[in-house]
Amino acid sequence: MIPAERFVSIEFSCRYKESLYGRIPDPYITISVSTGYGWRNLDFLVDSGADVSMVPKSIAELVGLDLKKARKHRTYGVEGKGLLVYEGSLAIKIGTHQIKIPCLFSSQEKTPLLLGRTGLFNRFTIVFENRTKNIIFRPI
Image (cartoon, rainbow, N blue to C red; front, side, top):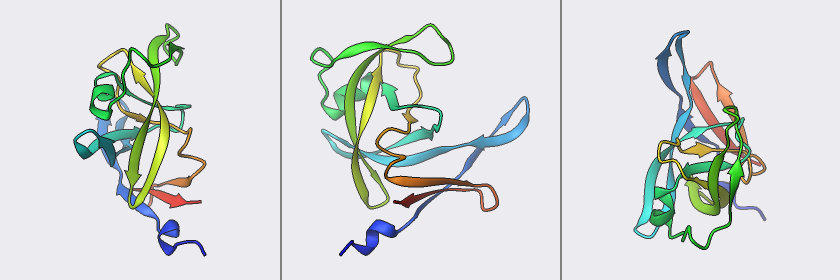
């Protein structure tokens, strides 16, 4: 028997920002991340274009990842120059769902907290519901 909570959708209000193109969705959501100090709420950009989640390297210390022991490599995005990253993972909560997802820790502190597809899109159907202005995570 599958627990009923597994099928409970989690809704987040979509944020908006002003841009050169007018008011546009800015899909940041607040989720809990397990740290050495307990669960902390952090704001992540839901990025369906990102293969994997990524956070600045300062988060590594918060979650107990030793960057000296982590595998490192370069990853490439739209900028084309590449970025030094360290491999790790994050334990996160979305609603009542606790999951562990792969995560890259960026060598750049200005990197936004990105919630990418790996480890997430295979667990949730994610709907950007423009009519109600919500981002809905439906467990698969």
